[in-house]
Image (cartoon, rainbow, N blue to C red):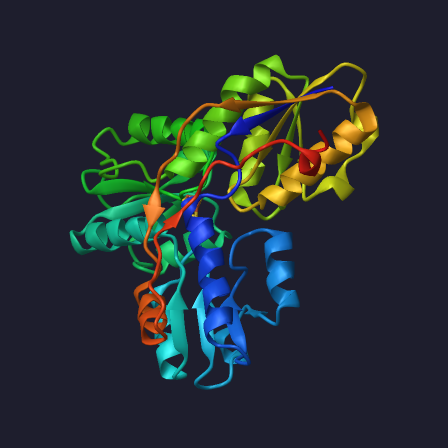
Length: 334
Ligand code: SF4
């Protein structure tokens, strides 16, 4: 078997930041109960590992005792949630990815200017719920090309579309085309809403999948960007499987001499990728190669509240940066 690990894959800067935030808070406040509103990132293992360290994940702020500590997840929250946290006197630390915050700001700005906002995304996703909450009267969610035909708008001359950050660039492009065909005057966002990490991970799969027999995406089923990677592989004509970890592998999926692309969604830790490689090479033997498609060098700051907490305890807050994983050796089954 030829295993081809594509880069970029796995953790993006937003996920790294959110995970670091919870790590730091656990470290700074030993003995305190730390709550996280929704899953910090959409990965079963990341959430499970924090749960094992005592973190409580809540779906409702009323589950947090008055004055308790709560971290908002990378997907962002609506102003109503922030207000509820204030009413209950909660101490909040906001781990929203800055690229999600950017879409929130666009939403607020366009709503203030009297635009109707067509938000392309999945209506049940936490990120879309949070963004919509910035201007519920002004936002309509568009999930598909079919939705475009059914849209009723106030004024076709005062329309803008925004996007969820983790969409398939293929699908989003088709929806934008349909919107432009129906509403030629529609405004576009000032810069791409689909984030750099989503775009780069999809590009890597789109370029390398055609030379492979199978694509394995390491990620959880509720991870939007992981699911989109399997769809991009399928669009490229290569069968794809989404797996949480090596335990999900079914060796019957693979024939003899196969080239298998291995990638990971933006919330999947690299040790799970290594475990998948180890399992496959252990079972089939073969080679491991890496393919670098884009060099990502994105840095995010930690949230202001956390930086203040760190300084008060004599620690210098670091920037958040993701390095490309070092591949090879026994960890990967070589
Ligand atoms: S996938 Fe993009 S928007 Fe989501 S956390 Fe990562 S960088 Fe931020």
